[in-house]
Image (cartoon, rainbow, N blue to C red; front, side, top):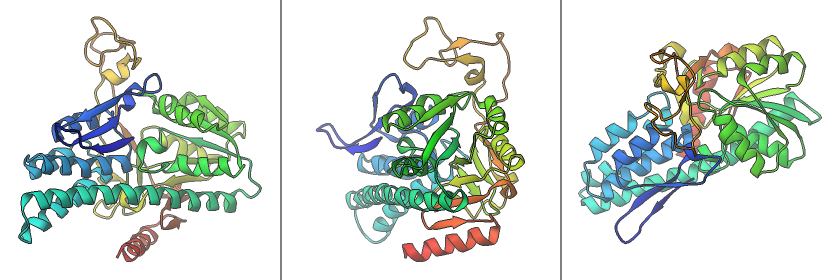
Length: 363
């Protein structure tokens, strides 16, 4: 979904434009950090783990092309404030760059170090994805013995957001491959339909049994006893275990608790932010009103359209409340699954111990 390329005219970062899916598979070519920042803000590249990888490559791109690395890092890290992985990836490549310069290396060597850091992060994320799938499937088998899982998921958490096969989607895919997935329920995920456009696209490509539903149909699905577990990803996990994820996740957690259904979050350890103490401290990105007041078909240009380029579905001038994320408190989360294991029940102490274990493994 993302690759570093070196054509004769100079290094570039090539992205699969997720705004054009599922109708078209179109690549975007970023020649500098500002182009990547715009791609991130437009959601052409999205998803916490992949944003971290993209941020690291963006720093490397600035370094290799001779732009101001610190300026590029600041712009990239601030492109989407809720997703902590983006800043983590940026800092990692920036630190590698600075370490070489402070050690007496030249700019070319420093740029090489930044690129090496980005590539290492890319590899590590693919490995982490595979381990999350293993741990997640083991947890499902423990909570729901006998297989035949009916899993509800929200937004998109597959290979489109990862260096590997994803986070929550990777667990569902592992269940599918093990013959233990009866049905993947896919929330369409309004207002930008990442579930309908992206998760259904990935599920179809893997031959999974899936069904799409509107977000507000989930309650009926729970009431009918058709959901065995909810699996979602995360864009930031606070130190107390509060989980910020695509808006619409918190209502699913409330429904899951009422209906006694496990609500499981799958995310790499890098998504846990010990510097964010609790859910109230998470900055939730507010997005433009036109994403709600217009409907856009990605592959169909609309003549004379303004704002987001879509078809208006609300009166002109309507203001919309459009948070990109909501926050689920830890008491509604059955477990958090990471590449180093699962935490259940979710507490600040258990999360801190998990992060310490991850650092020891890394070292």
